[in-house]
Length: 228
Ligand code: DC
Image 1 (cartoon, protein in one colour):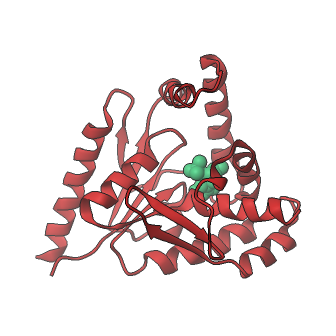
Image 2: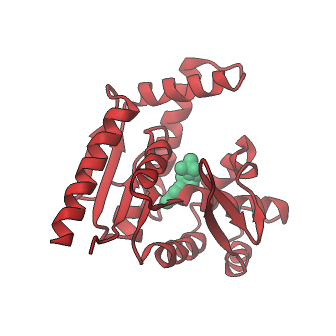
Image 3: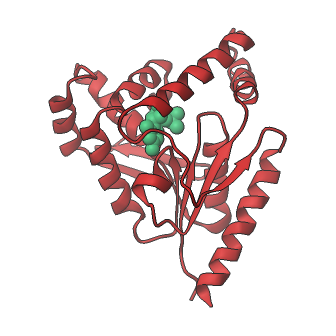
């Protein structure tokens, strides 16, 4: 029987993790688990509940009553938090800012890692985040670490914002990407690090399709190897 794998995708923001994680999950009919969306959901609830993002006890309590589910929609997954679809609300710039703070809290990370393990342990999942191959599933069947230069990631983000009609400055966007990298890599708990056994793909000069085909061929080989 074909084994259903646990696939981990980590890397800095703007390296193409979300797009590729969704595409890879679709290709193999796996569930895509966007772990950033989980940290974003905690931030949204904290914001709604008037909880200070530095208040570890209040955040811990919030996480203990939390239910997060991913439902496969026609195009992408819906994020259902305590029964309500928050897929759009968790993407606002305000929630993004709170998320970086909330994601640095150890109690929040412990609660999210526990949920991620429960969701993923049966296999048939692609999990995308910063600490999947190092902390959440160090024994994942396949680990990818996606990279692209800060200038290229800034340019992609700049184009994405411009398409949405925002007035943005390219240099400023690159500076912001570098600042997010520093925050992700320098935090005390589960900073962004590359797992030793991760397959590194630098997409600076590659298209999404090129990267997807490389990833899919690695996964196919692994499935064949484990199904022998
Ligand atoms: O991937 P994203 O931009 O949706 O992530 C939102 C925030 O959550 C970002 O500040 C990084 C953080 N994050 C994390 O600390 N660990 C993860 N596994 C996923 C995201």
